[in-house]
Length: 401
Picture 1 (cartoon, rainbow, N blue to C red):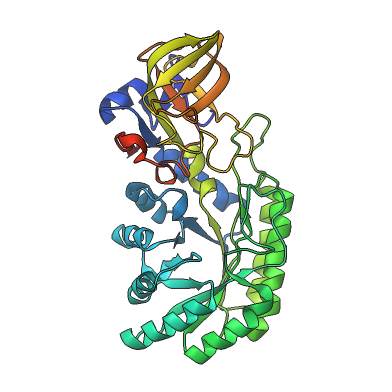
Picture 2: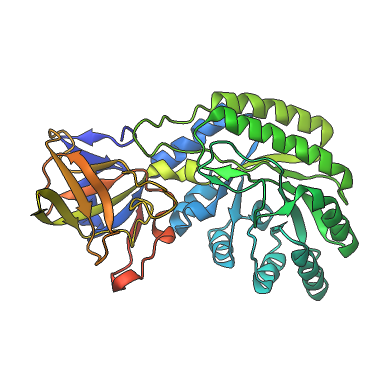
């Protein structure tokens, strides 16, 4: 992929030639994340979007502690989705005031951790209001809360739709006024609203339309708020290209609509910060999954390369993480980047299952045992989104370079 340079036919990651990086890590397989690419993506976003817009990192995309620390120094806030992610964010030094905690199934213990930590709880049910009221009373700390709205519209062309229609996320827009009333009666510290309608979208027009609709819905529900609006989190949904024919997202239409919304919000809600929350878009293109060829074999006329990594480390690349029809991620022989693509090959992992396919009938340079197979676009939903305990193979190593 174009974001990673090639020197003498060898891929370079974080300024380090691939073979040297493998020697430094000491093993394959592993994930490598490029610091410079992470920083560059944030800088590109800052340049394309209005300066008053706040940028939050959704940790669920990649919660590797070193990567989170790197991102924390470059974004305005951190969004977590579990007590485990909350611990990482606090451990790397993110200020509690800059952390929000979302998720449809927070346990009572997690809510207690959130209140005790002083982070913002994104309320997604009436149950959570009752629990937060009791926890606030017990700790003598009013819970900071914002309401996640399940809107009555969807993000068109989203890879995953997370709002509109029946959803486990948030509270249906029609019921939000009653929820806001219960928050006021419970004495919780209300701060604002959160909407996240979908993810992995490459259509800038659809994203811009969803952002506008989300803001409009917030303005309608703000009339029922039990206090001033301090936060309007409009979510994200920005996608990255994975498959042939996909193009990178055009930020221009999104920047245009966000500039308008920031100006409107500064007048309608002068105390409020307008926020977008991104995960995959910030980190996805910065990462590689690197594995070594163990064997080259032919079965009934079809060529296979067997590698030491597999779906237990990279479920998404195997097609078993949301794909309806399996498609290949971008793949290369990392030490033969300038070689002629000479053969169609299926790349499989070491697991005893026919699902362990990481590239199918893909035209690549000739691969031999010892060669390094690289899967691009692997910085998001990789290690922690994969069944690493499956069949008892070792967990994958992750490095930030």
